[in-house]
Length: 282
Image 1: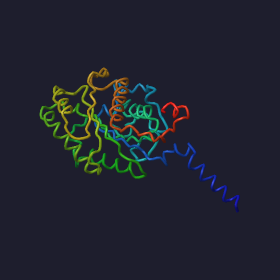
Image 2: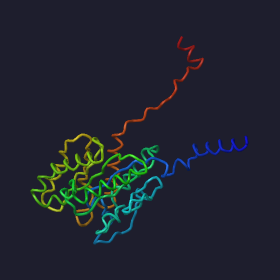
Image 3: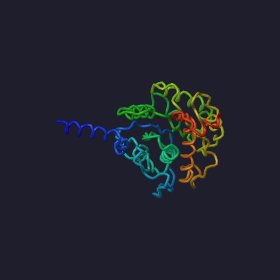
Image 4: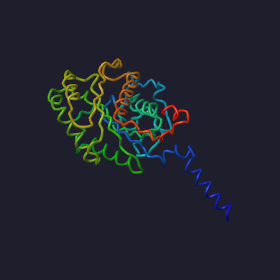
């Protein structure tokens, strides 16, 4: 009987300290990030003439600590293209999601599991993301599903606006519509200060790129940060970010996110002075 009891104790101890157990995504709480917007968030890096070159840079390689929520609402190991089953009417390539997650884990080894929730759809205007639309409802539904087995939504990553550069009214209404989208989403996700990292445009489909960019740079809501993609290299279509640009953008988003996390306080016990130090102090 005593041997049986000791076996149970040893088994429980192994369960608590085993690194394999602690690395299991089924046990660890996920740090969840919603990826939303249009084609540059969905990823067109490496896509030329509707053909993806299949090149996956080191910063986008699969990692057991990076998961994605599939279209079927199942967590799986993330891999490029992240949005293949979400933005399924287009050819998807490399986007900012994987390099973002990789950079976060590289810069903070204690961060834990990253859960990415792809929601972006190419060619969509901000009005198509307002409360009550299919895209908005799908985002909220997928966010809810992501939380079902534990985790915390840490931020929304938003890259959208190219479509709104075509029409003057859409461009002029962009700021008002985006702020409403953010406020409604925070309400429906029950997180009034949920961080939002939006990307200021590097390109556009019409003549009002600067109008939309100024709207993005002028958002004045708490916990809404803007990462400027202007100047990052584009594919030959002059609309979509190249693969190296997507990697760089993911790293920029990671840097912006990590700057919002307080530096952990190291809990060290006070060191007792040595005999020599005590003598020196008098």
